[in-house]
Structures are given as C-alpha cells and as structure tokens.
Image (cartoon, rainbow, N blue to C red; front, side, top):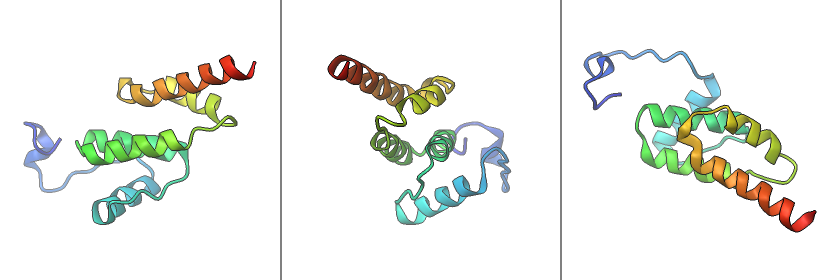
Length: 109
C-alpha cells in the first residue's frame, strides 16, 4: 500500500475505516512494542488482514502464530467456519484447523 505505486503512497493522510478500534489500537501498540494483546479470534483475524494490507510480514507471522495457539477442542469448529469465509491469505491457519479436526476425528472417535 505505502511502497507500491498506489494512491496511498502519494497522500499525506490515509483513511482506513474498515477495522474496529481495538484492532487499530493493537496495531499501533504492536508497532511500538512488538506485542499482540488480543484474545478474540475475530480481532486476531482482522489484525492479520490489516497486517496484510500494510505489508507487515512480521505482524502477519505473529498473528498467524497467535491464532494457531488459540485453537482448542471447544472452539475449532467456530474457527473453521470463520476461516472458511476468509480469503486465501489464511490458508496456513485453515490447514492447521483442518489438521486439528482430522487428528481429533482419527484418534478420539
């Protein structure tokens, strides 16, 4: 967005209205501290999408790692349904959820 030949790279003020306050706040905190303090899976996905839009590879990697750590038996189906609605950018997380579902199905049933 900022480095490419996009309109945003030529403007001094860039307005992005898509994300909730908590996602922007966490994004700015990450820029200063390098830490992600979100517990909501949906907020983590939004932060991952924002990181993708502004081309912050380290934030993308950290978001993906945090998302993978939050997958449990009780929330895997909810996560899978949310991820299934998302774009190709989240394929790694989707694969982790699919593996988790297969693992449970194979060993528990």
